[in-house]
Image (cartoon, rainbow, N blue to C red):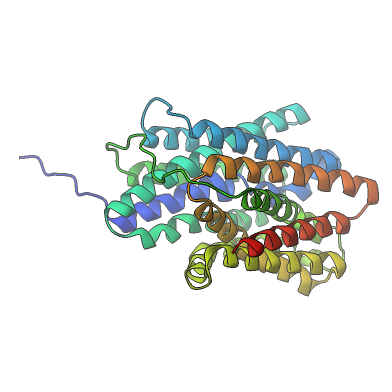
Length: 366
């Protein structure tokens, strides 16, 4: 008599989600930030070119999020695993490429894969946890973003060549993907809508786009900011690790605060905290202010991402479109302004202003 395969526990499912988001988002989307400075130096890229490469990734994320909302053939698990494989391949190809068109195309593809990982992985994990009555473990799933950022930052800091950084990140993402294959059960995971569609006020949609614009400028250029300031350059290997470690527990923290204060109030306060830290790092570039920016931007951006989608009551496609538009514009804007002024201070102040506006819009709606 054949022994039945034991069903995975809710904790195992949550851990599978953590590994998926770590590979697809924490590494797939954000490893570009610590690799950017040595890549710029080796290839003599301008800040505007660096910003365009980042924007290509976010354009792919927008396209992927919209595609993932369609009734695609096959199971969500199959699409998740395929996206993880494409993500690892695109990371490896970045280490082998050498031209701007190739970089733009590969980051576009990686952006689509990242969106598929987040949408399909979240749908699978949250459905399993809800069925088991363990929805509280969803914070473990979302902690994968910060975990992936921190682990890949440690890996990159150990290497000196930008090509080796991309290839090592690809290997790390592939290893996480293999673990997801083993831990994420096959089964009947159809295309049912998990959250009923509802109405999201225009002010919230606009605030979410402003948040995307504001946070991504710092998330893209904070390591370059540190490298460009000789007084704080020794912090470069550690700043992105700190960013990731701050992001890992942030969803659990901000959802608990939202339960006490209300979602829109928590969103508004988080946006204002993030704006203050970014403005401080722009006006007074020092070890203390840059570390503050890493902690508070890392500690708020995933919480803001989750709170915005919860507050929208299911209007995921529209909110994602607004968020992605902000992310696409942010790095391109910052890169061109840096090339024109020779400083990141003005782009960072623009990012802080966008976050202040986002906070004001949501606090006025509470």
